[in-house]
Amino acid sequence: MKNIRSKKPSGTITRGKTTKNRLRQTDHFLLLYDRNLITSQAESVVVDLGYGFEAVTTLELAEKFWKVNPRLKIIGVEIDLERVEKAKVFENPWLEFRHGGFNIPLRAGETIRLIRAFNVLRQYPEDQVNLAWAEMSKGMVEGGILLEGTSNPSGGIWVANILRYQVKDWTNEGLVFFTNFRQELDLDDFKARLPKNLIHRMIPGERIYGFFLKIGKPL
Image 1 (cartoon, rainbow, N blue to C red):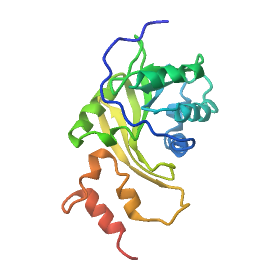
Image 2: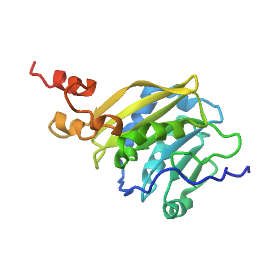
Image 3: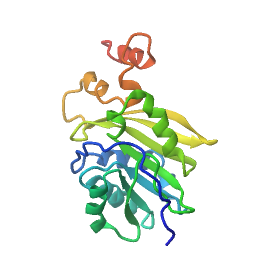
Image 4: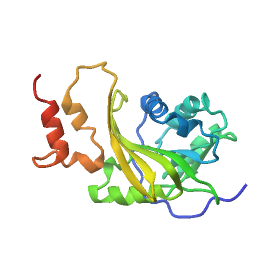
């Protein structure tokens, strides 16, 4: 097996809070949004970046995706080495946990088809977002996807950027709003979960502010 390229992880350790089923709906969304990307028999990998104290979100993602592609290689990446060592017990030929940050640790010749990065950039300054996206693009295959966003603790509400890697750069394909409708719909809940590149732009004159202003008007 080829060695992983040695490099210092880019980023800082997050609080790492997570819970079972928190990101289940992101798995369902990705299968609906671009099933072919996940079912492709190419050798490129799927990365769950910043899975936290427990590896549960990575394990749930693997369970879901292996139903449609049993030979899909999945990598959980964490900047906290202790969390990586703890997750090693779950490894198998198609699942691996690695120590790293936004600069995804890859083996020589490895490429990435999909990165899920949730509740990771929330603690960073807004001016670090583009730098993190640029780091995550390294190793991404043409047409690959980055789903990057924020969820509430239960996963019942989340908002995420969906970025497609095309012509050596990210193309923003949209902003995804999710709710399971198990609580009263309140636009403030979505505002609080906006990704880092948008959450501080809820001010007059910004497009995201105008968007909420329009959808918040009574019918």
